[in-house]
Image (cartoon, rainbow, N blue to C red):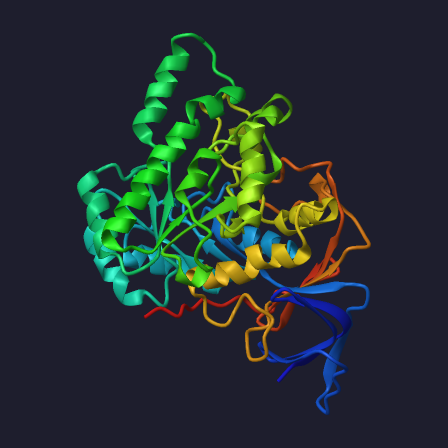
Length: 447
């Protein structure tokens, strides 16, 4: 069994800094801290002047497989993820065909088992007519991360707008329900209004069409359903100051039945950036006015917002170059999320300990992921070694997304991901990949 020791490093975990060594045995963490010696032959890695953190668990990505593989594949995007310090991901159902059945969901797991360098889980999708499949998935509640409801327009028939269906899903799902919250009727109303005064729409109109009320009304509706049925609700990608009044920080995360997340691009960009980046930052829900960004940061740090995610959603450059109304919505982000948050650590917005809490610990707690998200003896060795004395400049040459571009191109970020370990296997080290081992299916501790 392979033994690996990371020597003389700074281990950041559970709001503490431990200086010393860490021993991995096989896929698990064997021992933490102090000077570790083992009689077994061990591979040694110098961790001096670096930090060791638990791998980022990204609870919202779109890896496009099956059916949309001209944009991305599970292999390409998971590879980009581990290069960025992401050791586990949860992928959304809006592939082609959408994952509306248990059988189609298992097909995605089969693809990942042979091609994902990170650990993985997949959401079951909901439609206006797949309630029987939702009932079936309850039997897999420790094998599947959750149910996804698009309460705002997306592709194909993913929009769930039937009150009866929503009622049934919230009443019957035994899994976590994750929602994309935008009120479709208000989007249509806003679009009609702006078309009456403008003949040609542009990217800066996006946050006007998908405004604060669009998000608030839908989030409010989801919370009402969840409270009525006692559902476990997780609202994805909060973008507005107005929505934050719907959430509380009065309970510890373990006791919350309603949680929410913020995505890295909503913490970084504002509506002012449409003038420079245009459709590159078109996404749903929209990046909005600067006061929302400031409110999101405050809510993240005072625990109204529970986790940080990416909503990694790659599209080809050509798909982004179409006119505003036809340009596809979504940004590729999974390779650079950890480094981007370390930029804000350097600026003093948050500490590394807070970053680890929101990107690793809290995600594991929120989804009740088994034995991951922390650096603990006996847990899976999902670890990231980071050098904060070097910089990473994002260029086309080092972007690993299949789509080949990033809205962050040209930015220098104040750290380098040196090594990423998935289940004790160094899948990425000093710019080199070892693809001799794939990631594992995530398991959950649910009653």
